[in-house]
Image (cartoon, rainbow, N blue to C red; front, side, top):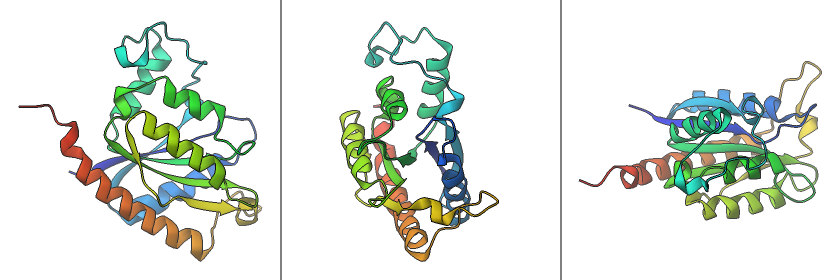
Length: 191
């Protein structure tokens, strides 16, 4: 049985290009063949800002949007965030989505394909890696930045990256799979 990879679109802003980049990542991950892949769009969950009365560690969710988000995150063995950089930081929507859960993230690996201007989102991805560590996610050290990403989107809205992005994503998926295999036993109930 293959491990499940949730590719999470880390932006909810109208007019965003995250879904365009993420569709390429999804197809690339499927062709890579080491995961069952699911594309997850944060916008589909419409998560308000931390609106659950109980702390996420309690898992006493009252709202349907949080319950659906919890099920989505819990179902994955690994995560690949497709994340923009906003003002040298990760998007507020993604920070909120991570912080409204706790146990569902624990002992799972994550990787990042970031996109932006000159830095390709690297500054935001570093902040994201730190946040993920705080919820017991193993954020691997091989992010794939896509600088000036709009140059890779054609008139039909299709993202076609260069060899550096493709090669980096191959390495990223390989590392992510190694960590997913290694961490899976840590999530098994004690016997």
